Image: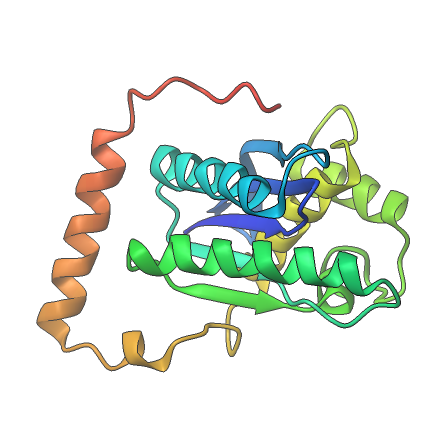
Length: 196
C-alpha cells in the first residue's frame, strides 16, 4: 500500500509518501512541503497548494490519502486555512477515485510515539527511526505528513471516508484497481521530487 500523508496548512502544507513493507515496516518514498505566499490573497494561496497537491498525487499515485483531522483552535484564522487545505487534499483524492482517511493529531502521535501528547521533536525522532532516516525530517510539517502516512499503514480500519467506494461491485473494484495500476506504471519514469 502507498499512502500520501497530508499535514494541511495554508503557509506550509506537509506532504509525505510512504509504502508498506513486510513486517509492519514503512518505507520512505518522498517528503516535502508545499508553500504559499502569505502576502497574496487566500484564493491564490489555495490555488498554489491545490496545484502542488495535484502534482504529488499524479507523481506518486497513492492508494490512500491520509489527512490530519482538523480541530478548532484558539486562532480561528489558522483553523480556517487548515480546514480549507484539508478540503483541497480530499477533493484531489476524490477526483482520482482515491480513498481518504482522516486521523486525529493525538491518534498520529500515539501511533508513532506511544503517547498521544508527544511533542513535535519526539514525533520527528520517531518518524526518522521508523523510516530508517539518518536525519530528522524537517520542517515539522514534513515529519507530521510522514507520521500520518505511517499511522494509516498501521491503523487503516475505520478511518476511511466515503462509504460509497466500499459499495462498489467486484467488477468496479477490479476496474478501479487496474486503472490505478496503469496510472502508477505511466508515472514510474517521472522525475524525482526536489522536496526532500
